[in-house]
Image 1 (cartoon, helix red, strand yellow):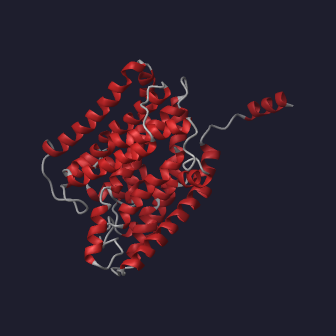
Image 2 (cartoon, helix red, strand yellow; image 1 turned 120 degrees about the horizontal axis):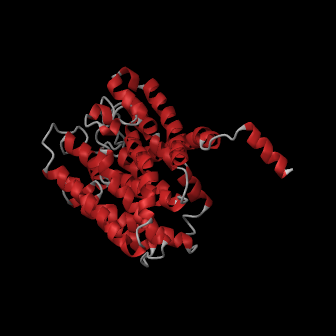
Image 3 (cartoon, helix red, strand yellow; image 1 turned 60 degrees about the vertical axis):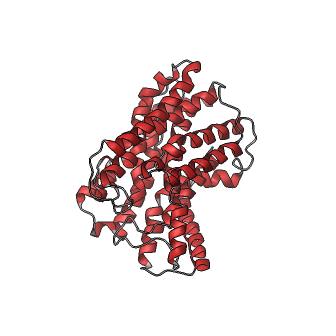
Length: 373
């Protein structure tokens, strides 16, 4: 399962690398292609990759946290561990973004919510996309972490025969978010980043409560696998389903592409991969390289605002021939992975070792040593 995480983060990178408009001022293209037709077609082809990657992360979060949850575990300890997982990397990248470019153009009404990871709760683009743009997903993850210890005991009590109904209810909930986004929210100014208004983009895509259904879809998928009620579906079959869902997202109304078109195929992929892992059939995803890339995937994703957007901004509006542009994208990918590795190795891992669990009192440690002696 860890190996899959990198490919989700990679899909977000590909989406970001093809953007016709950067999310940070002066909003110049991130896309490297000098040929306007190639630039347009490349942006169109991968235009849903970012949505797919984010939805995958949210569903996978629900799956992994449920899979690793121990009944009777401390909710406070769980939240502490999850905060330590995300905040050190976030703070380092936040500081880097502020020093490099954001401090000069960002009011405190934007950088403070971003620092506290509550910025996705605000509908204003200059707040929810401020400082380090990719960090908006951490606002959603933080909500998931806070409520999970209180909800998971209830989900674990649901009889196994009703779990598929629960998973179906989560998909219906995703559909309701689409309907509310398209038909209930009032019209507003058009977003600079998408063809839909700001309020619709915020509520349908960024607003943390709107993403809860994907998270809990992952929770139900985990329980189905744990209870032995998962369907027999090969990983390749789930991947084909993801391609079909992606094609639907590309041709359906924009709101549908946020998550509705691909949520079910992604959930099936996660369940199929987990079942394959249990049966020791996923050799590639269990390889050392795949696992290591998966371990750095969070830092790799989070650093894209600096490693890709800021570096591209420094280059100005220069564009390249198609072969050179492809090479530039590969170089940026390697650079971004390197930054992710640095964060994982020197920030995330040490923080988890030092702060993820409360330190034992000195007398307790001494007593443990004495008993072991």
